[in-house]
Structure formats: structure tokens, C-alpha cells
Length: 186
Image (cartoon, rainbow, N blue to C red; front, side):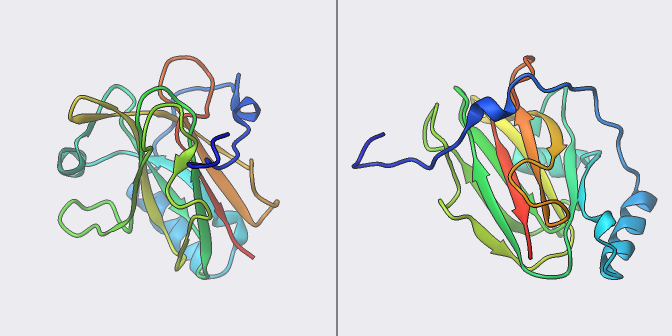
């Protein structure tokens, strides 16, 4: 590791050879049910769920591709730590929004890797989100576009019932260490 430009530790081997199948998309009614359950303090509602991406939102942030979808991440109504890590040849992007409507969604985090094969994705120690639901898009750069990554939701990197990870693969192999986000709370 370079002393001049240290990079965060990231055990990419822990994310290799994961089973994957195309995600089942959660509809608007399902999103509302989860949002309401989280507001009531039901910890079982917290987690990541695949949702469709509105064409206007995808166009606004230049996301496209065969695996285009977002993750609706239900978080408790309390501070949540968000940490990003990556290990991939293409430049990766993690976009975290406060909603899925192109006209009103605000960017909470828009992180890209500084160069290929770098584990840095966002600040080393992450950021703190206020809690509540967020929408996440993960992808890799091809020219001026961002091609959506395949994703999985996992318990990696978090204490049971106190967080989850959204992990992704930018190729067709099942190594899900391309662009990963971990949400954790107390």
C-alpha cells in the first residue's frame, strides 16, 4: 500500500462467487408498506429492495443498461452510517438519492472511484445519513454513460439487525465487489 496515497482496506474475496438471480421489483404499494413499518420502528422493514427506475431519473443521471434498476433502502428513523468500497477495473459510481422522482429527488451522496482498481468510494469513514428511505443506483462508467451493475443485498459488514450492505458486480461474473455500500446503525 502506498504511504503517500493510502487506500482503505477492503477484503474483496469475501464477495466472490455469490449466487445471483434477476431481482424482483418492489412496487409503489410495497415501498409505502415498508416505509410505514420503518416509521413504526419495525426493524424487520429495514433493508434493500430492487425497484424500477423512472426513465426521466435514469436519463438525468445518465444510467442505462440491461440491469437498470435502483435499490430502495429502508433505514430506521435515526442516524445511519454509510460507507462505500470498491474493487473493479471500470470506474464505479454510487448515487444515493432521497427519492425516486426525477424532478424532486435530492442527491445525498454521489461517489465515484478515483481510478480503476481503487478501494476508495466516498470518504474513508463514510458519511452519516439522517435515516428514512433512500434510493441507490450503482454502475460503472462507459464513455459518458453509467451502465447499471447487477446487485445483491447482504448482511456483510454489519451487525445482525443493525445494518445491511448493497453489493454489486459490473460484469457477468458473480464477484460482487465492484461498488458496495454498507448501511449501519445503533
